[in-house]
Length: 187
Ligand code: DGI
Ligand code: FE
Ligand code: FE
Ligand code: FE
Image 1: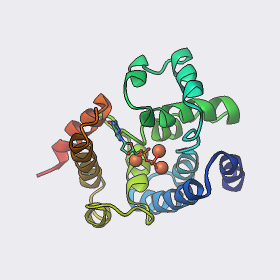
Image 2: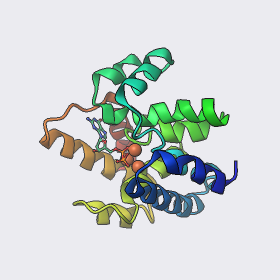
Image 3: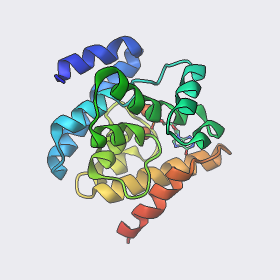
């Protein structure tokens, strides 16, 4: 699929703010793909579609999850965690994107998981550090990602876990699995 085509498909499903975020994630992710030797074409497509399902009605996403092979436990966690896995399903069904790397990068962009592929790490961290993001700790991660993709992902996961704990939110197991797994690269 041509990138211009992908952008046109995604645009009507997003708000202006979310669409602009998406374009910045794509740009950031392509830069990182170059740096870390990941396919720029795959990364760009994954980034463009990563928030494709963000504004689907909750009942619709719930339905997709129930009817799919996706784990039912998603439904017992916050609905913010649904849009990545649902987008990975939708792009296959609607646009015939069967590439496992692209689907994985979209599916796990919010939580991460253990043993992430580099393409998954690149989309995950691009979503976290794109230039429109502005929260405590983001600048440090932006610097670290220039030299260490694993450490940057670990820091993002640590920050997110701390943030969620402070909010007394539940934390999806894959978020912990990603954090634990990447801890082997820290120290
Ligand atoms: O869709 P975006 O806003 O661009 O970014 P995202 O898909 O990474 O979603 C980020 C939100 O998801 C952020 O508010 C933190 C939240 N989140 C990430 N991991 C977990 C989580 N929320 C819960 N409840 N549990 C998690 O494990
Ligand atoms: Fe997202
Ligand atoms: Fe994210
Ligand atoms: Fe996003």
